[in-house]
Length: 443
Image: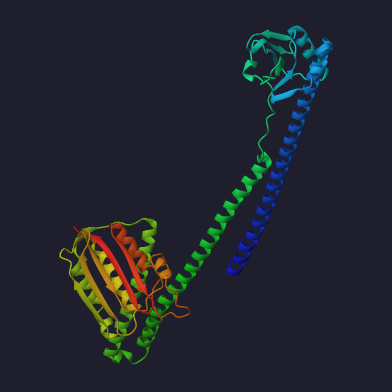
């Protein structure tokens, strides 16, 4: 799939998902507003019910007081104080004469029933001469239950008053519970959960698509590099074979020997390329066995340098060594250690300009040996340094193919070092060179 198509798919999916999220947010906000309005209405209704209750109780008590006054007409002019509400549940009525409890209870029951006040209540009569509640009774209108005694002690609600009075206490009256707002409906919660799952799946799908796209590009780049690498020795072998098949060549042994060497060298080169690919295939399949033995790293470094002397001399280069590690013996697979060192030296040469200058250092660090291979090559950016140990990754060179390779050398180096409990890291600056540093535990 082309990059343009993938980009269109990602943009379209993102826009669609954003639309779904906005729509979901709209419905969530709408439900919250609806619940807030419901709470406001509920609070308003509660307030109205409370006002209505207070009004009906006050009206009932005024009627009770008036009927008590009518029983003693001589005291009418003394009753100027209204009914007073001491607390939301406690009402008091002033009265300047003694009160008969039976008459008071009958009048209270009668008036409360008339005005549909059905709350359970307790009433008490205060005697100003004794300075205490002289009578106390609990009344349940729903069950016609009356109980004498301190069921709900109205003496705790004394009123600062000079004369007699009676009080009514609604002991069990409570405000209706308000349902908490902002509780989303089940359907809205389920739809939000589904959208969240879709978001995760879509995000994962986008990540997978981008990974597959990158793998596809790496695969294409690998095939192109491999084709280019294989094409050169095949063409050289083909040309050399054609020359050897020409008439008259058999009479020139030196020429035959020259072209035979070319064919052999190019054949060795093909074998080396195929071997690299097979090594990576074995690593992927897990068909990998190490044959560890005690080795001297300094000796192997010197042998690897000898194999590159011809290439270095042809490019007027120099490899300088400072092998200062006192203990250079490690337990390692010899073949793989040679490959590790050779890969790093080969990269230092390939990515350096003419007259390459390569320095190799060694020292003992943290119960191990640390090897540094520093070149004066073209270097890399920080972003490129993050990826160079990935399989098939090669530093981009545009349309140029001036550096040979498949992008598997450093992946192989990193893997082998990890298998031997070692590690490698890189420091590099563009146009200033690169430092490859690896560490191996010593024996």
